[in-house]
Image (cartoon, rainbow, N blue to C red; front, top):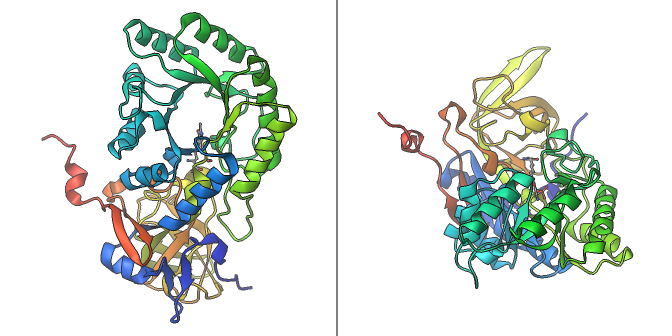
Length: 432
Ligand code: LLP
């Protein structure tokens, strides 16, 4: 049985099949990009990202969409989402630094994290560039953080606007590593055992922050909109008596990675969340922080095949020049991907092989059972779609494999936004 070609819906909006069967994105031929920038290469369709940002702003309203920068962050990406009118969620001092380096004003940043250090909180409270010092708000995650903010207040630092992160006790249907709404979670204050209500008291008693709202995030890559509706309802019910101006309902909208997956779009996710809050008469401003749904399907990763190994009656292995260092998701979460050959992207895929990387372990797998076009051979360019989120951002240089370059393509032009790591980069932190 043959598998159909990779569907266009898994490719960036600007993807097209050229007359010779080869893939282009935003009128840039991917074979040319691989030639110019080398492989592995992340190719992002800039207009695709912009269109998802606009879809989100249309669904929720300006000043209500916070891009979860952990999904993919570099200077150009921070500038792009800021330019589209989104706020940015930064979950560490490092993410905050990159966003500020890109020129995003402090008051367009939301500071997250379950274990923020005193130094990171100080960075957040003094972030510059906005109309007043500090980030737009800090999402408080623990009683220890309340203590640290209280300490900073005593030292005379500006008092931040804060939201309190609540764990609503809602089970999201996703991989356990990325589910966060259940009671047994390292994140936030449990609603069920009264910690969330106690956190409100502590913030008010200590004056460590100006409480403006609540926050929850039930997990990532969630497809079941009823999980979101449930969480929105639980949160709206909890938040209502406090009459605070803001409620953040997290990110988490899933995306389709494979032929058999189908995900709700951002607009319908918006309807579900906003309806759930409206039906309870909640008047707070509803904020969301999508990452994956903004950026995942905007990019592909292009690899060069280097080795094909056939073990008769057992399996064929097709090895490419990247692997778990540029995409650890298959290994971490058993995530599925599709693959195609760049030069005949619309071809059926009758062959099967394990698509593997170049790292020194058998677990270094990109696709356990990849459907591939006939006769994939050494030198071919093979690509995996939907790698725009949690790919480059979770990349490592395991085995001292340099991290790939990232290009943004738009209107027939490609610009390098993250250069490929060099051998020199691999020793730049080493001391003799
Ligand atoms: N807000 C908070 C507080 C989060 O922790 C996250 C993701 C988001 C928003 C954005 O969620 P998204 O819309 O991207 O689903 N590395 C994993 C995903 C980890 C998600 C961490 N938090 C993966 O590759 O699937």
